[in-house]
Length: 173
Image 1: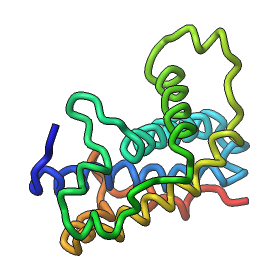
Image 2 (image 1 turned 30 degrees about the vertical axis):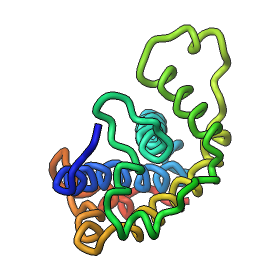
Image 3 (image 1 turned 60 degrees about the horizontal axis):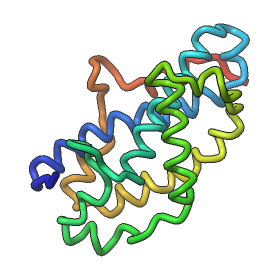
Image 4 (image 1 turned 135 degrees about the horizontal axis):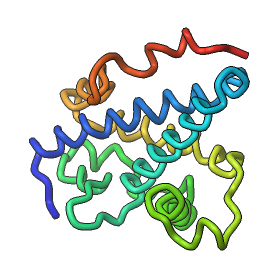
């Protein structure tokens, strides 16, 4: 599938939603008292974090299926092609695809993987957070200026304020 420039602008706005939530949930996950204060909320943060991680892995590493949008669709923008790395080396593409598949099988479907293979610890997933954040920053910097202004995602698509607005009200270390 090929996307035109207006569609890519819409894709950036959608991606901003996943980025803002991924970054919010990384911050919440790192708050040690959240687990003590409300274990159910802590578990929900982990599930949400891993779901948004999966979306971002698929966006950056593809390959796209059907109407999926991925980072290489933005190559039609000359500024983007010149600024975004032609190859993503970290996380390694084969690791990223394996991680995405694991998350897909564990979060999105009831598959035999759930009972045949032991789950990974969060330490395993956490090692990818910085690499994904770096890719997000590189992607944002490579966008044309008018698209960069759309990217921060000032409010949640699901309504109301960004979830990061509430971070200061969450129990700290």
